[in-house]
Amino acid sequence: MKKRINYLMVLLTIIFIVGCTNIEDASVTDKETDTQEVTTVETNSNNSEKEETITTAVDQPVLEETPTEQNNDLFSGYKLIEVDGGDLSGHREPNVVVDIGYGDRKYWAFTNEFGQLVRVIADEIVLQDDDNEPVTSAGRYYNDEAKVPGVERADLDEGHIIADSLGGESNAYNITPQESTLNRHGDQAYMEDAIRKADGATNFEAIITYPNTETKIPSHYKYTYTLKGNKVVDEFDNGNPDEINKSLGLTESKSTNSNKSTGTEDISSVDIDGNGQVTIKEAKAAGYSMPLKSDHWLNLDTNS
Image (tube, rainbow, N blue to C red):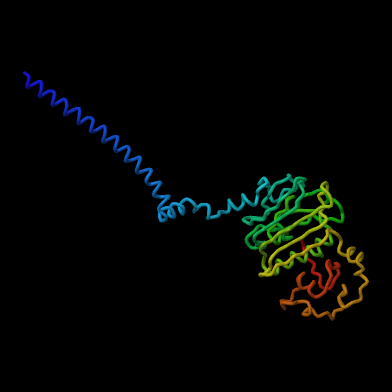
């Protein structure tokens, strides 16, 4: 009997020891797991090779700048809204940015806190595609333009910042009341014609300024763009170029750079690149003051 009790005691002792061993093993395993996790972190921070691999994996999305991220930076402080390209309303929201490029073009227009159109930018100006886009017989995407306050005046046109021919839409975020002669025959027309002849432009930016915070009629335009690798800057007031020339005493000039054609002018003296067309830059380089009169022999009758 005593032997049985001793045998039972030994058996219980063995079972107890085995049970404790399992508990300790589980505890050790947990500790080892924790240690491994800590070790992994420590190894990553101490092992330059592994740290570089992990850093590359984590930082890759930051280094790869997406269009969305670029737009977020570009639109900072502005609300992005959508406006139909042919919307005739002359109303503009303050502090917004609108895509005014027809089709897939991305032309961005910005307003200030007073609802004035103050800036238009485009990475690339893509010309109107008459063969693949719905264009009217007048060469326009829409039959009319937005009625921005001021365009009701007889001397002001519904002037595009980026013309139909250059892929621009006709809502209030691409239209300003612009002096008619300037729009049809002056610097605005010259600029648009130059871009068409160059088959587009890059790095386009228009800065529009106003005499006060109440009006929607600009006082001045500044255009910066790149044509075939050459940076061009055009600045002009929103006024009749004939009257501006007269006020500057240019209309009475009898120099060789007179306005009216005599039929003997040699365009080659102005046409620097020899392509048979004269750009604003070439005309200025030849000594012609801008803006030119509408009947100037160099002037082209172009549409906005």
